[in-house]
Amino acid sequence: AQSVAQPEDQVNVAEGNPLTVKCTYSVSGNPYLFWYVQYPNRGLQFLLKYITGDNLVKGSYGFEAEFNKSQTSFHLKKPSALVSDSALYFCAVSEVTDKLIFGTGTRLQVFP
Amino acid sequence: DGGITQSPKYLFRKEGQNVTLSCEQNLNHDAMYWYRQDPGQGLRLIYYSQIVNDFQKGDIAEGYSVSREKKESFPLTVTSAQKNPTAFYLCASSIDHRTQNQPQHFGDGTRLSIL
Image 1 (tube, chains in turn blue, red):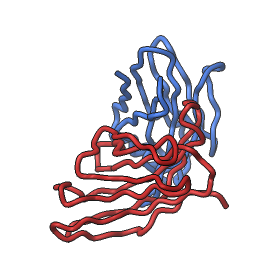
Image 2: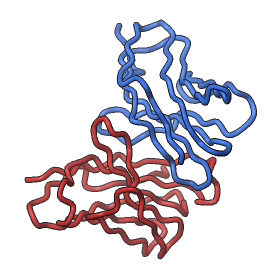
Image 3: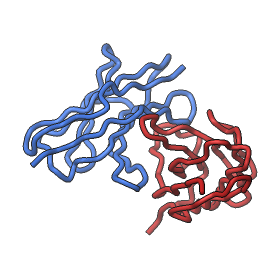
Image 4: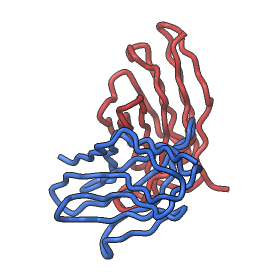
């Protein structure tokens, strides 16, 4: 069965520093991987996806993610964090159907 | 602008009452989904529909019902059988259920509380 794990409930980072939000997955075949962001009392917004090809995927708002097949990971990264990046981040995986399996979310706090 | 509209934004339910959450999309998407979001649990799939007049149960369908009479609309009814309905409900859509690599688009949610 497909599954996604986000091992950190919260990540704290100072503004201007690089940030990483971790995600690992488990699928039996080739994964389709996604990152979404959620601001308070809003729906999820799509950030980026990995389907195939380059292991480094670039997305919205300066975010990128690195796919690592051997470690079954898809960590979200940004070179320089902004206070406005503070939000809840979800990793998701899709395999044989269009159903997405979501992680439990990681709250990112960026301090000025 | 194309998007997904959920209404109402806040909803209160009395004991023994059924309530219906609205979800409308003008993206011309075939597939639509309902999720429940609870703190610390991520999103859990309630029901999904791949095409008009067809829908399937997700992981937590008990106490909920849906209909898909029009492509644009996928209302969710929270019945009195759902004993713990307090949650944030999110509706989403995607282009085509056969295209697994397309992202889902989300509405801004309905927050349901018990009176």
